[in-house]
Image (cartoon, rainbow over all chains, first blue to last red; front, top):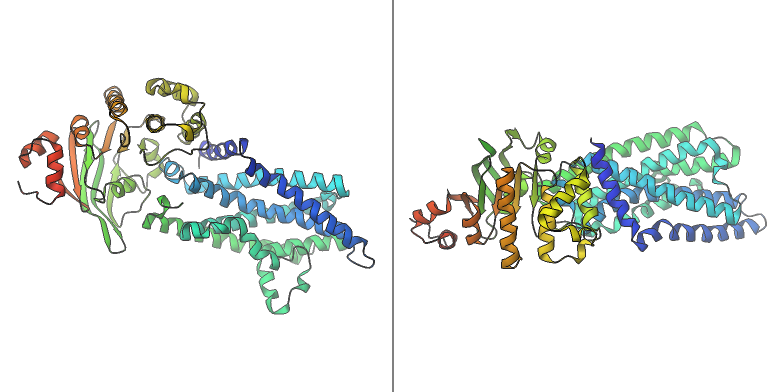
Length: 262
Length: 243
C-alpha cells in the first residue's frame, strides 16, 4: 500500500466538496435539521408526564451515533459512486492504484465526514438543548469505534452490490442503513421488537451499541456481553463483506463490468 | 527486445469470443498500430493489457514480467489515453493532473505538469474546469495525463478521434516528437489509415478476435497488392484477404 495513492483519492474527493453545495448540505444541513427535529420530539416526550425518562439523552445520543454509522457507510459507497458517475474508474485503475488503497481512502473519507457531522450535531445539541454527547465519557470510544467499523463494513458490502448489479443498486448507497435501522434498536430497546424477528436484531452489530448506550444511561455501566456481541458480529460481518466485495470486483473484471458502470 | 509479449490470449464473454487465441510482441521503442474494424477485439485486448479485464486464458508479459503478478510495478511504468475516457469533469484541469501525478508518486508534480503543459500548450487551461474544454483541448489534457509518469509504454486508443484535421495533425506531431525524444514504446489504435501509415512502424491487424496480419504499412500494402492501408483495411475487413 502506498500512502501517496491513498492521499491522491482523498484530496481528489475533497476538491469536490470545495464547490459543491449539495455535498456540503449532506454534511451540514441535513444533520442540523435532524438535531432540531429530534430535539423537539425529545423535549415533547420528556414533558409528557410519566413518559420517557432521559428522552433528550436517549434520542439525541442515538441520533448522533446513528449518523456516525450512516456517514461511515456513505464514506465508502459514495466515494465509489462518485467515481462511477465521473466515469473515472478506468482512469484510476490504469494507474498502479490497488483496491485496498481505494478502500482505505474511502474509509478515511468516512472518518472525515464523521468528524464534521459529529461536531456539527454535538455542537447544535449542546447549544439548543444543553445535551452533552461527551457525557458518555470513555464509553464513547467503543461505541464510536464499533459503529465506524460496521459503517465501513456496510459501505464495502453495498459497493460490492453496485459492482454486481450496477446502477440498479445505486440507491442502496444512500438507503442501505435504513434497511437495518428497524432492527438496530436505535430509538427503542430490543424488547420492543416482536419476538419472532428479534433474532435479526441480535445479528446486527449496531443493536449491541445502542443497547449499550441505553445501559450506560440507565446504570452507568456497559454490560460485557453487549460489548462482546458487538465485537463478534462486527468481526464476522467484516470478513463476509470483504470476501463478498473481492468476489464482486473479480467478477466485474471477468465480465468487463468495471468499465461499463454508470 | 520486446516490451510487450502476449501469448495465446483469449477472452470470452459468455458464448461470445471477443479475443481468440492471439499472440504478438511489441518491440521496445516502436510505434505499433493495432488496427481492425469495430468489435474486432482491439479495446478488449488493450483493457486486458491494462488489467481492467481478466483474460479467459493466455498470458501477458510487459517489461518481461507477468502482468497479473506484477501489476503495480508494470502500471507504474505505462499509461493510457483515450478520447472516450475523459478526466472527471467537475475538477479543474490542474486538480485532475495533480491527482494523477499523485497516483504515480511523481516527484515535483507541479514542475512536471508545467513542463507538459508548456509542451502541449495547455498552460492557460490549467485553471479551467475540465467540463468547459473543447475536444481538442481535452485530447491534449488527456495526453498530458498520460505522460505524467514518464511512461516507457503508452497505449493510445484513437488519440485523434473527433479532432479536426488541424488539431489532429498537431497532436500527431506532438506524439512523434515525444516518441523521438523519449523513445517511448507505443501501441496505437486508429480507424484513420492515413494516420496509421504516417505514425506506425508496424501494424497488427485484428479481425473477429484474431490477428489476421502483421507487418509494416508498406509491406502490407504490397502483400495485398493495394495502394495504401485504407485499401488494405477494406480488403481485410470485408473478408477478401486472399493475396
